[in-house]
Image 1 (spheres, one colour):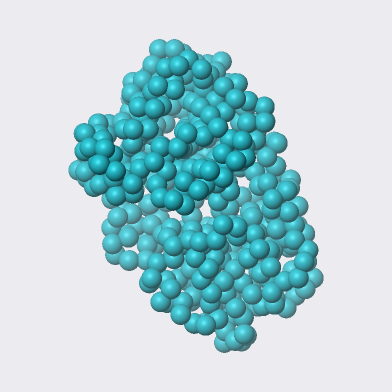
Image 2 (cartoon, helix red, strand yellow):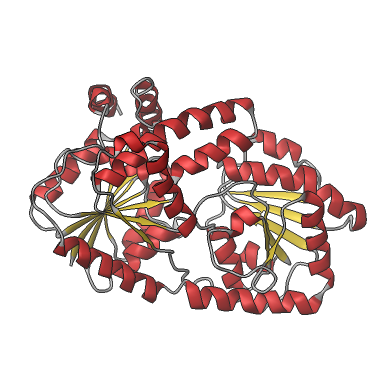
Amino acid sequence: MRILFVTPYPLSRIRARSYGFVTHLARKHDVKVLALCAGEREMADVRAVQREGIDIVAVYEERLVQFLRALLSLGSGLPLQVAFSASAHLRMILEKLLSSGHFDLLHVEFVRALGMLPMSLPVPVVWDAVDCVSQLYEQGAKFGMTPMLRLFGSGEARRVRTYELAQLLHFRHILITAERDRRALLNLTHKQPDELDGRTLAEIHVLPHGIDRRYFHRYSGPRLPETLIFSGKMSFHANIAGAHDLIKRIMPRVWERRPDIRLIIAGSDPPASLRLSGSDPRITFTGYVPDLRPYIARASIAVSPLPYAVGIQNKVLEALALGTPVIASSQAAAGIQAIAGHDLLVADEPETFANAILHLLDDRALWSKLAENGAAYVAANHNWDDVIQKLTAIYTQALETWDTAPAADTTNVAIDACDEVEVTALENI
């Protein structure tokens, strides 16, 4: 099978889903990746996967151009994140690749990539929505850290809801990571029933992604005593909210009884406000690190106190695979099928979360049970060979049901108005 894989960001191990899909598909299929990139760190990611033998074409754009494009889309009704990545340059390259006739199928990852698609597509498309993004912004509007984040979440949730519903009517095959997100997408049809008009909805396939157990293999070496870790991209609003709750509401309760416990917050770009709130010397911010495994593996416990979340939390799966027991909020754990009390611990209220930390540090038998069962859960439920087998079956279904007559386009409304400004900016880079 000849697959063209389009993403609004480069492949890297941090983006475990797209990286896993491509690297495993490439073992048996002809896969070419087209990715939008900004900044030297992302270009370094491109070079790293090229050294692994992955055929990837990177389209570079200054971040300023992307922000300008999103700003120009205000008032159009288009989600800002879709406009942000709606690169006319990448779209032209994509059109050229598709017109070559070399590819059997187009795989498009995430809602942000849809703005890069041309008006007409000559091959079947599988859109990996990944998460129900409108639900994420709805939660952000409710639980966001600042009034500005809540206001932004409310506006973007409204725009993304309409846009996601249009994709349910436009595409035939959509992937999603978790059942809760599939239900949330289908719920859009109840919120906006007038948009359906008797049209057929896409088939939504729940496809959790795998964890590379050769890379995230269970660690059996020494641990840092009484050390907690919270990992993730720390510029992401849900992670910021989780880290703030951890620092301000959970750790003071822990330190009342065990003042020597340390907390590591590992991940890129923590905002100054978060660093300021976490100025206690017992808290360490790592910032960006190319490999989180040593931090997660050597910690005593991985914590994920997210007040809201969608999809699958890789931070939870990776810690489980490494044999680091996890305490997660119900929101962070809801995207996977791990059993609370058997594979991980689940706690929501600050006092309950703090008690779970202290209990797990003291109960060595429970610690060992969770370390073993958590790793076993990942091995049984997030095996890449099983995932890729299911994905290729979906591809085959898409090919067999493909109608060469193009569907009416719903993805690029209001993008073209931004193109002239964008191309001018690109020429000046």
